[in-house]
Amino acid sequence: DTGVSQNPRHKITKRGQNVTFRCDPISEHNRLYWYRQTLGQGPEFLTYFQNEAQLEKSRLLSDRFSAERPKGSFSTLEIQRTEQGDSAMYLCASSSQSREKLFFGSGTQLSVL
Amino acid sequence: DAKTTQPPSMDCAEGRAANLPCNHSTISGNEYVYWYRQIHSQGPQYIIHGLKNNETNEMASLIITEDRKSSTLILPHATLRDTAVYYCIFSGNTGKLIFGQGTTLQVKP
Image (tube, rainbow over all chains, first blue to last red; front, side):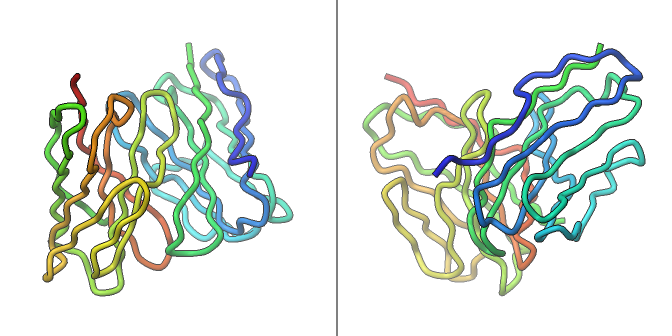
């Protein structure tokens, strides 16, 4: 069990730049979730996929955010024209089916200067 | 969105049982109660979940009241490594978890 892998672990960027994060879920897990967490707060749901289909997006996910999961395997989360308010930990999780436990990655810490 | 109520912080002596309460009065019949914890700088870690009956695994026990409006997570013999933020969540068919603020448990020697 290699667990959920997220890359990079840390990303520092300047305001206005685009960034992309990658998540590799546990093999054969068909559900994949993205969360965002700021200091002192619980993780906030952003979006989730079942296989390659994006089934739900939070209203927190503005037009600058886009997530994909081609072929139902790894997923990417892109933020365009980053803002300082985007600074947060971005967490990915996967599960084998609904009602099953989620396995979380260690996250990508984004700092926008 | 689903919402639970937990005390913001609790202390527990090392070796003693830690009992973490949670209110989820708006839970519906097909929604499960989940507990996760998060140690600083790591992703949340699953602990246990249940629907109606009490559950026990190698990490903890979950006691759910008969009306299902509240639950208690029990760590039978807390260690310093159990110091973390504990989240109580209820969730339905989507598997989507809506996290609250959680309870910060400090285990003291």
